[in-house]
Image 1: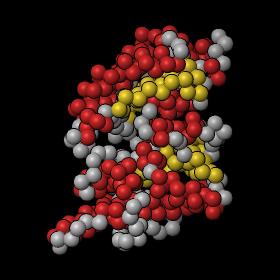
Image 2 (image 1 turned 30 degrees about the vertical axis):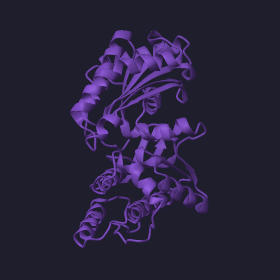
Image 3 (image 1 turned 180 degrees about the vertical axis):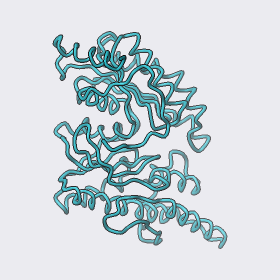
Length: 358
């Protein structure tokens, strides 16, 4: 009953003359260590996108500490929302709908954003939209490329997930394949930590790799057979760790640049090969890159090079939209609302939420 009331509120708003292009969506993101709020007009015009990062806080621990992240979100969430509304040049009462990440992520961190969104939706009497964080990363490409329309293939590469998704429509997804174990971003962070590089490790590996020889060390690649779109990076991670330990036991000085370059090369080549195989299998002419690892310059360059060779259109978001941000959540929420996909006030955090077939 409550769900139907929310639908009626939204479509009543539409009948009163609020055209789709003028709908204001407040997006809220708090899945990990960034507190973010954004306001979008329509589905693709960013009026504000405020991000408060906790990276300096977690660097001393070598990674995100969930309890600390949750506490900082509690402190930051309302000031960040207020600033996003202020920068957008609107007032809270002008907001038409509230979209929020409800998973995947750290459960305590997610609950902060979900609680704030539910409170605002209730107080303002506005529709609430629970958004899958991973779908949000895919939809960041709509903000970066205004002319982009489905269908297209999406390569999602983040700290917790690696997947190939055939985006058949704004609300239709087909999972081509995903990781069986470690995600690519997780492997980057773990290898960086073993090499003594500061958090976050992914950008450090990327920078160091530019100084090394990508063919110096022949690290293994898993599941390379044609037609297999699943990923596995645990074996590669173990191989790199074993190599580092072996070199230390022999008393050899670690050639960190070569290790970083060879490791990144193995990851990137697997991602690129599977992505373009999936593009051709699905009959698509467009590939988009999504997720935090999309900011990796080696991956972006290799995908762009292969796209030019094969005549495939290739898009990826700018660095701000690659990271966790609320603009992508608002964008995904807008298109969910167009399909009548709202949440009720019983919405809860789902830390293990995955990408699902739709």
